[in-house]
View (spheres, rainbow, N blue to C red):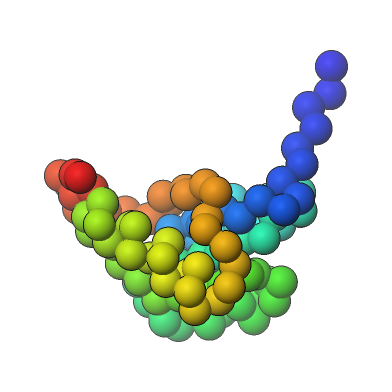
Amino acid sequence: MALTLDFAGKHPLVFGGTTGIGFGVAQKFLEHGANVSVASRKQENVDAAMAARGQLAATLSASPQTFRDFHAVGRRVRSEFGCGWPRAAVRAARVPRGCCQP
């Protein structure tokens, strides 16, 4: 049985999605119809990702360290870029040990 991936109309947010594995994840979401947003700590990575993949819904410089920070980035994507609330979040970025506690 073949696996069919259809992310049309879905909006994932990929933290660390401008380089490496995270960029690959963002590309696969795009290939399967998703409206993808990516975030990175470094603005130059954000700019390069947008140049390489112009169809990204949003790119932003952000470095979430806590659960509240992740939520704030989601709100920012929704309000600034009009993308709707992200339906999935992928964390491909390195974060400090013990962060992301609610």
